[in-house]
Length: 221
Image 1 (cartoon, helix red, strand yellow):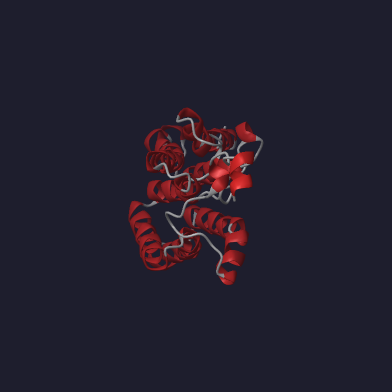
Image 2: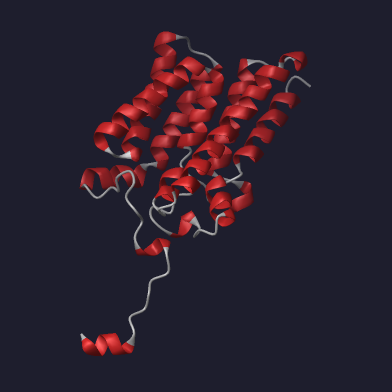
């Protein structure tokens, strides 16, 4: 039971993480599938490129909650079953992996920034505030969400190791950090080339069906 329960908890975390709220919210609000425009990433930043701020905020909140709530549940109800920090970290990692490779959406997931933030806040609230502050500072000055995410992914495990201690939480943070950077490979290339989209920049024609130019208007031109 000591081995089975943590694995079952991690599986539950993965299944919850597999709920791709960027797609769910977009469908509910009659928007285009976020995988069909912009960066193609089913996440809050790409949903924002549709021009619908409410959809982007809802996506951000729900993606963060699906990382936060499963970990919090372990801390609240886990001790009576002998589950502690190790299981909480495993569940958080499971939720993060679910977002990256969601079983309910053909394993086509996002980059996991909001979900990772939710996991971090549940594992260590103070670390969550420090990581969020790092993201906000980089995003404010650079206007690049991807750059802010990459820097925060690198700093979160460093904060944990320097201020607190090595352990299950640190291992989970290192794993998520490496995966986050890896998932941002295309963004890193665009940043280096100077072609990365900035925060609030709309996706362009891909977000909405293009309007065909009539034959008469072409003749006039």
